[in-house]
Length: 543
Image 1 (spheres, rainbow, N blue to C red):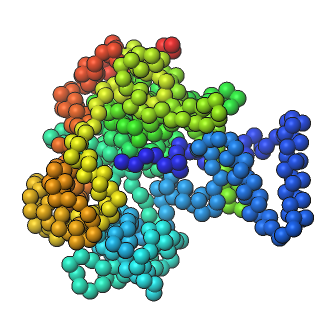
Image 2 (cartoon, one colour; image 1 turned 60 degrees about the horizontal axis):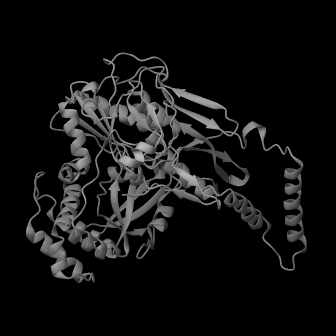
Image 3 (cartoon, rainbow, N blue to C red; image 1 turned 30 degrees about the vertical axis):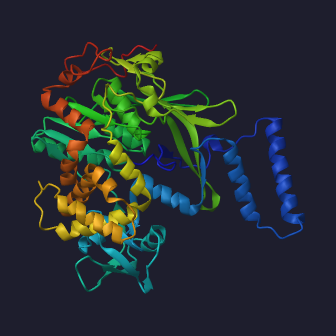
């Protein structure tokens, strides 16, 4: 699982360089400070003993100013960084449509996105990129390969691949296209009538993708849905609002944003919902952040979903992207957002020395800590907790590994690229021989041990055997993913995913949303409405 990156944050794009028409220097101190900086920069650029790079100096001065804000979410972006940020946030870029990783001195295809030049050419997961145009890619890093493959749609690039089990190299002349990275890579049903939708990010089309998945699952007979926001670092504010609107009635508040001057902007559901009464469980964990927390918090406050899992990350800040001259941009924290009941989700705390500390999500889950946290009320009067992050209605901690498994996993962590390569080789050899309901064979574990030791990985056989359950899970996941794709891999993962199992069991037992809340332990229960429309905004009392 990945911790939310600093660039994967809730952001809205400003169309003007500065708010309110620009910086307005209002005080003598501000004027003096600006004059001081200007004088120093002028003297250094004109009179310093050595020739200086004035543009570089100005950039460093700007970065120093941003650094002094001591805000980990405020960043000055170069033109390249803003392009990377835009690609990550919007989920679109010019390229051929592959996710890549490093294996054995070559960059290897880890995923092929649908409806892309790579998919149309038949590129497969596991193909190694050995040459781009006339350049060998031996020992290239993923960033090097990515920089060459990215480009303006319509331009050409020639790529040569080596495929396991195929002797001759495979060469394709690609025409780059606009590639969309799906936020919902797949959706599926469990037990015939429980829909499952994993959401990886909130990019420009996330709400539409979730809506399409809900329609598909309902057509397949799903009577309820599990919306999985675990490990989702967030993204675009508007997409979080639109996603909430799929399940909330028109007029219900989704979130409010409050800036420096105390001015508040309230976002409400503006369209008719797609699924206003469909039984819904939302999964979150310590890596669910920002836009994920907006959705979970809004649905929780309006009693529209039961939230299951572990406490979320706790990022309740809004960043605005300000375009600057020269292609630069400033991503700056401009506001905090609040759930409909008035909860601030921001869990980061500023210490006396000016540094920031992040409260670990698990520390908010003990009974004693929860009792000390501010209590808010949902529309139905259920207790929901403030004080940072979204606390689930039903806390389910993930399974922990045995001591032997943990010891083996820690020992092998530095060599996981070699292990991943060996797993992939085994998976591609077995592809075509497996049934979707396959089970891991003991000889596969021995085969993997032989492969990684030949690759230079040092591990004792006794330690390997003691952690065999962990080894088998790695084999099972990789083989299922390579042979059958994401949905089959998730089915194989279900036995180890206690949070998802709990959510599925709850939805299976529910005929309506109120049935789900009957499964929530006190004190979170309240008097639930009979799926009737609620008044605009929230009826929850503020503490």
